[in-house]
Image (cartoon, rainbow, N blue to C red; front, side, top):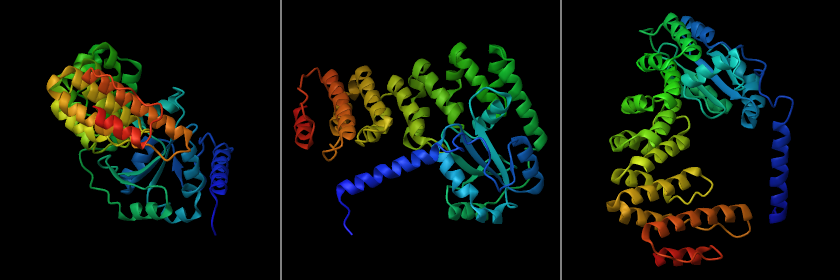
Length: 375
């Protein structure tokens, strides 16, 4: 059967409305664990049980107003077939509403510990190392495969009592912190304590963070890395370039690699040079006009060229290549986004070269070719 473009559009629109209605259902706040699995909301209790029973912790992280979380809860997490795995993991339900309540702060400390910055998240944790050992993804097949292949380690230096004490130190940092205590807390063995100290120092003592940037950026935690990148974008220097480059090329351990790259690219735009151009270029030339990383990369390249004359030729070549390929006609939203990116690149080239090239009234494939040749 052949589906006309109009019928296809109607079906797509109907599907979008259906999803919106689904997301706005009674469970839209995603505050209640789906019925079935033996959930706990207390991470310390989940760790105690996992530690004693030698089982991984399954952490499901959700937040208020998260439609994709609702889909997962109505689907996989409500599937009766999950009963097969009820005894194989410790079920941890992690909900954040960002209210600042005691329960929300406790949930946030867990989110900070595992670098959660996008939702939903769903992964298995080894209780003896607190390392993420698998992402379960969102289907029954992927969940089953992850649980069946998950292997926890052996008891070692980390004990439940040490984790409980670390959480108590984190609570103290949240409620009673000075600059001096925060600087001392940067050396704390617990990642959450260090992160809370970093948040305190970001405005009051950014130089203390910059001094430890290489060490901090090596920690596979998105929240720490995001914050350090933001500080370096304001207070960093050329000596920090080499520490930022791996986060642009391959942000290993990141749960939100696109944002991780954006943060690192923004910092490199302020302090990077030759190696930075090489690392940033692939993200500028993708032509993905809806991805903020593309425009951030264009801006960073332009900033580097303005600061480093010996990089202008390489940046000019990258920007010319970055003119996006226009989408098929008919989608006004895509047309506008594509044109906005093209104009951004065009302005950067004008500033870089001092040359005036008119931007066409209509940005299409022939216009793109002419613009690329004009520089």
